[in-house]
Image 1 (tube, helix red, strand yellow):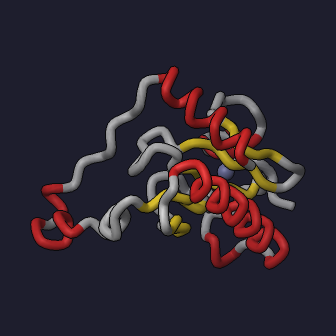
Image 2: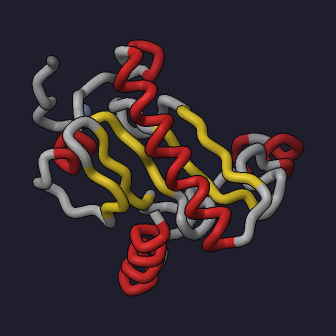
Amino acid sequence: MQEPVQDCLFCKIAAGEVPAHILHEDAHVMAFLDLHPIREGHALVIPKQHVIWFEDLPEPLATRVTTVAQRIARAMKRLYSVERVSMFYTGIHVPHAHAHVVPMYHVHDVTSQVYMTEGADSYATPPRLAPERMQEIASGLRAAL
Ligand SMILES: [Zn+2]
């Protein structure tokens, strides 16, 4: 098993060295809220093991990440009354494999039509939510899992 990487934010979160709004934790996987949610509840599921690319995850670990994402998605459907929840790996921002799990209120929540038509200049990082709101969202999701 690969050792944690010193300057990796997600290795630090997995080790409990950096706080996060944790939704799920087991021996191999952790799930927590994204700090810049596309939609409230936007969660990340990571392997605790430092693996940069999702395609390099050992199959049991990739399966475990997906299983936790499925559980979160079912909770999101109940909590937020959305028809669909997306799950995707982008491989950007933090070089430690992480699956995004996002409740979809609109089909363009993930594939922004604005971005597609207006280009990269129109892109802005989604704003952070107030800490109290993040606590409420995390509590609601944890209780629903
Ligand atoms: Zn890492």
